[in-house]
Length: 80
Ligand SMILES: [Zn+2]
Image (cartoon, rainbow, N blue to C red):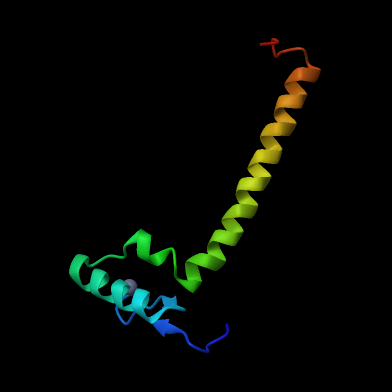
């Protein structure tokens, strides 16, 4: 990971490019004893995980499409 200009929330340990957001995360974590999803979505950890999630969504969409065309080929889908 590129560590230049990375700020870490000392409470949850997530990293941010933006010091302001890192501070917001820290105060939220201390106050609620949990991370705020609106804040942690900006973290470097979540950003890299989101990329993987996109891949999962895509493969699920492909499977659904495949299943639908399978049903059509089986004559099980009525025309709308
Ligand atoms: Zn935090």
